[in-house]
Length: 311
Image (cartoon, rainbow, N blue to C red; front, side, top):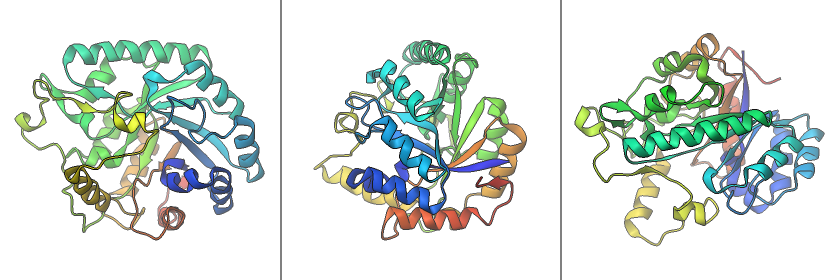
């Protein structure tokens, strides 16, 4: 039975204002299984908000909560030894690369070698290494999906997957079938919901082989050279087109159980086919007054489904 968790990315604005106070609110609400989210790993090997490991652990301990995973971005610019040290202190053993940056077949193969090397190092340090997908990993290179290359060219002892069902659906694929396909390599599940009134289409990468194939010179994803990484996990832009893109993108998320995703089927499939222990709420954006309101609403939404546990 999947346990319900929460990634702190869902309350990142609150974390930026008051990290300890936000962690306390999350604990008071009853979220027991926490995935921290550090998109400021160039400067901070911890949770991304300058909180010492012991203080973070002690705060969670007061509410019976625990850290079960962490996102580290940009992974390639992080001090992995310090990341491992911090996470051992908070009691966490799973490290997730939240996104990659892909262009050519040769580049992809080099990244697979890097992921194997990082995964081996983390394995030797008592940690599990996972890769978290967005929609762009379902683009193709030479007719094969990037996700398939990652699956086939990484050692299952050194890298597995945190399957994001929302972004899988937005690549015009059935998340239920993808969960079956990747099976036991799926160790965590990310869950959001898609609203019926989104201003953005569901399918972000097209249906034809030509649409889905990565074009020469095209780069998808982000790495540590992006402005997002350099600004500590914040989108900073004065470009009108980019601002309009963000405005429309924000309409494509809604709270759990209020959208169109087949969440009960996803839960049932993850329980039957994968090695995932947790299904983790990740709320990228909300139309509700605050991010706290949003995770409260999603908690209520999750409770309509079977096959999950809060303890």
